[in-house]
Amino acid sequence: MIFEIPNRETLDIKTIVLDMNGTITVRGKLIKGVARRLKKLEKLGYRIILFTGDLRGNANKLCKKLGINYAVCKNSDEKEREILGIGPEHCAAIGNARIDIGTFKHAKISILVIEGEGIHVETIPFCDIIVRSINDALDLFIDKNSLIATMK
Image (cartoon, rainbow, N blue to C red):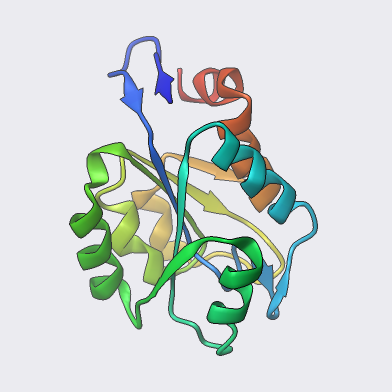
């Protein structure tokens, strides 16, 4: 989707890269409203992919349920290699932890999510937007005017 941001380059976001633990799940449980929003985003034409350290060992089961692809990345460097491999110039990254710096450094737009597991302070210099929930982050891509308003 094209986002024409006043006083900034136009963004063409095709892929949304998500983190799992602390971002779309809290203590291993999917946050209410995420599945519905991911379906909306896919209908809008976004590709959704999850990069996770899979700390709790439930990524495969969760991603099958959500119908999305995932890659296990044990650290920030592995996440960085994954995003570079898919073409970060059309990616948005959403996460909460130091492991997400690898995606945040290269994504066209990076969103830091404050959910029940908190955020890591080292991620702050690498993000464009900070939101209070994953649903707020996903809604920025569902209602493109919200993202434009936040970025201008």
